[in-house]
Image 1 (cartoon, rainbow, N blue to C red):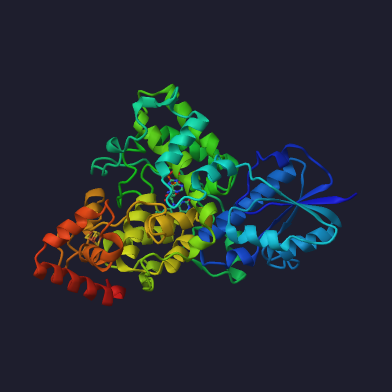
Image 2: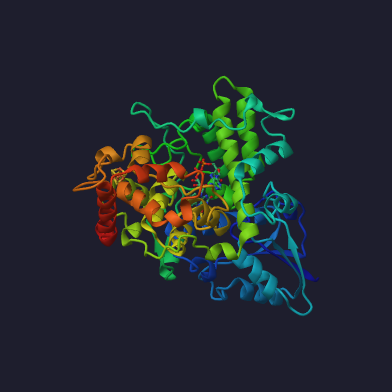
Length: 511
Ligand code: FAD
Ligand code: SF4
């Protein structure tokens, strides 16, 4: 019998893929845990354990459904710790003449496979992952040959294409966007429901990762691993979200608090990015819940969520696919500063950063506004090298895969692409963080103070950022007001702000 090897990567755990609809005795599914993947960046320990754990459950599911699986564990003596070499040795082992693989989302692996999957006598075929909602044609239409990409137009197109929340040709509720009703701070009397957590015993997996010498960051409770490792867990997490969190999702989407680490967020990104869940089923679950009880779940909560999945998630993939590999080099502001060491420990006096980083190290998770307006905001104001910022985000979050991490980090958060993605940099002084969080009232710094002892670093760094990039930003119509305010300030105030910022930057390690 001539064999066919089908390679499945750790983020291709899509049990509804057409590959698995039929059992074929001549087909062997190849899965592997390799140092090539654990070592290309320093990952959070929960991310490594989460991926390997989910892969092992997926392999068991395939076997339970009659498929043949060749699974190479990280510590298997036969493991060559490299995807191409392991694939080659498996082709030889089974005397296979066909290799199928699903299109990798990451540019790194896509180019590697295109270059290296070439052997005499082996027929190689690439297949779709059957996961994303925007096809290659959609990406061509909306991204190719464009200097700027705007999420809103792409999102409206996707709403129409899939007929989601549409009333004929018009958006349901007469508006595409309900942001004015969303994005409120969390009142002190409101307590978000507890996050829905799993309790997997992952001790042997954690021991294997540690004894293999894989360098990781963060902590893990090995006996009670909290993230979904199987499709059925992802579905449970989705149901919990729809019933308990969706009714307030949009309202508190941008709120930050020390009372809860995930507020009303779904925490579905890991299940989605490993493809255990399909974006369409997530959207359908949310729209169906709204259909059934629109009195309890207002439209603005639902639209706010659909926008994330059907809009942002598909859109950042379009940016990545279109802009790589140049995107990975972009550094519009020519920022060169090293990331402060407290990004790896959370040991800073700034409460907002202490909480967002501490939580990321403990949970491998921070919600969007913590990523964008706390850690990302600080890194941009302080002029940190986007390469370092990228590596940090790519390592620390359980959901971090380059196709989604990089446009969010380099584009949306650091404006390193000079505005391909966003029309202006996402920066703020302490006022925004104070308004949207309960961080500032417990901080040694004073959010209202701009200079002098105890002044919040965000305030002077904010003006330092605009001042040092005047040549690049002044003509941007969306930023004009900041420069008008700056130009109206007395020279002494300006100089005090700049001197304060310089002093903070010189002592960045001890902030
Ligand atoms: P929810 O708030 O419940 O949102 C629902 C879903 O919408 C998410 O699961 C996600 O799939 C999708 N989504 C929401 N916002 C975005 C977005 N901006 N881009 C893409 N998808 C989105 N997301 C990742 O999946 N992986 C990353 O590595 C990643 N890195 C980020 C880095 C930075 C600097 C920033 C600002 C954002 C990043 N995001 C990333 C986007 C977003 O922060 C996460 O998707 C979200 O926090 C995941 O938590 P959740 O599942 O609870 O999301
Ligand atoms: Fe962060 Fe400044 Fe508020 Fe402290 S005062 S929590 S440093 S924004």
